[in-house]
Image (cartoon, rainbow, N blue to C red; front, side, top):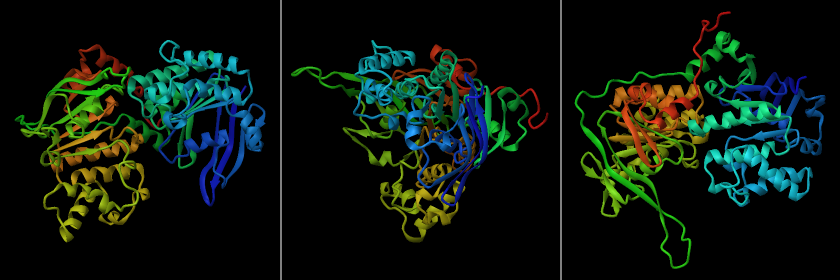
Length: 535
């Protein structure tokens, strides 16, 4: 018996068509993955099922849950369906959780809204589902708050909220996009276990074929609001009749061709015995507060013209080390040198050294002021210069930077909201390049991008290597990306470097158990047994 059946669903928002004749189904105990790039209509399909569309949305077709057409239900009737019959796991757990309410209260909320049981029983049920999603009572009491949990733990709370009343259908919208590989593997295993144990249907939304290739029973590929291909996972990946499906597959396993490193190693960045402590809250009055050591005795050298990767799980100290290198946070032990000059002089960062480094952040939109035009945004590093270019020289520098990243000089007059995610990241790279720094730090710079856009950005970086002889430190939790864009790699765990070496050597013959764990947790696409596009 079919659990969810979407038939010829079309959706318009105002005069803009969003979905066109979308059809798919989910059976009890089945995992169906909907994949495609941003803007393909994946999330809007999920929101249509949940009845969470904008006011101006107009729908046609049918969405049947059992024998009921959800499009015919009133808002009050849909409120009775949400949570009880359909649960949803959103992409960003911190925005899905209330920061001022405990995790116990938030899991209980769905139960109490539906009046499924008294408060005492609801509390017991909340404890049961938190245990089920891997948050045991001894470490995660109901009194914990979201900010006290890691990203993966917060996602487990959101899943607990969604399954509190044992819904028939669970929708997971990009549930692992921002998670490191080991946490991602744990969340995917958890979802598979819930489907197996509870017999629910799972509709998982993702842009990465590798994430779902090993767990989905069927895959639905969407592009520009339409289903372009669908079928059983093995058969679809073996045939891939549509060119768009083949493009997604190739982008997921994309490797770039970097130029060889310089023949003579010349140290550029030297990190010697660096440790970074954070002050902990005072536990008792008149007692000295304790300290947490986030980075422990880290040492490495990055040579000029070399591409170095830094990988590890969330909370391992990667971002803390990055801030120290950039002179944004002091260190308690050790020193950091750029081309022989210390980043810190006394208790202050040396801006003459700091200006020779630039950074590209994970979220390009969040790192720009939306009120300013692109010309002003990418020339922000000019304030670090003693004599920044002005007039025609400034305009020429802007044009050169934009052209270097594949954009037009005419884009200088636009606002950041007028660009796609990939274009925004190109602008972020242009901002980093404009003063020709000695070192660029990429902090999770492609983790939030679609696989096809990610492939374009990685190719762009390879091209810039040839044009600008770039030196970079690439920080990421995505090992497949790090493998394709680095010469050497450092593996970080609990604030320490546990393994380092040439990238291919580390990936092909990892020596530390933690490195092997990271590599084994990385999603992998199956090798094709049939030529793509045939059969």
